[in-house]
View 1 (cartoon, rainbow, N blue to C red):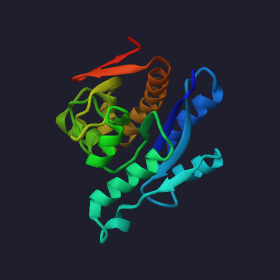
View 2 (view 1 turned 90 degrees about the vertical axis):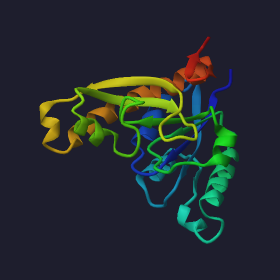
View 3 (view 1 turned 120 degrees about the vertical axis):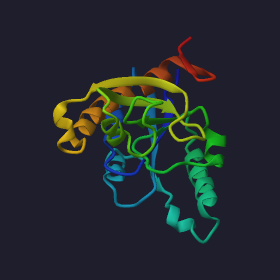
Amino acid sequence: MAAARLVVLVSGSGTNLQALLDAIAADPEGYGAEVVAVGADRESIVGLERARAAGLPTFVCKVKDYENNGGRAAWDAALAEATAAYEPDLVVSAGFMKIVGKEFLAGFGGRFINTHPALLPSFPGAHGVRDALAYGAKVTGCTVHFVDDGVDTGPIIAQGVVGVRDEDYEDEGAALHERIKEVERTLLVEVVGRLARNGYRIEGRKVHVGE
């Protein structure tokens, strides 16, 4: 069975991308997937450097390039076209900090994977770690889910739990966020490999893997 083709989207340091690349390099035959391209919404980021160091093709679609030429919808269409050029089986948001639109989801709905630093459906949005602390949660964590047209509302694939410590309130959650990221990297690598090797189907809000 051919390896699943992955396009990975990044916006920053690309640590989740690196975790995927390392897992694939460690077991290229057994992992079940290969990264075929890396896309970004900005230039000069470490995530793109990681991709190029691995010999991967890259592409950049910047929102500001479309401000006077169709706006956000045009950017979304361009991102969809650039991603589709690599014929991915799965698209992975590895710290990609832009919300995609209708055209991207029309092409990749049910195949676009994202991570979120909280236990959804609790604390969606851009400040999941901060919001969990503000609420006084005793446990939080991360969620790997499929992207739909809502904000962090797509079907959940897997979750990892991270305990909240008293000292996490002293640094506005920075240490907590780092512990969540460690769990997130491991979980993302496990989930992507499992989906690639075993296949899956989505029924409503439930994701069935390898059934």
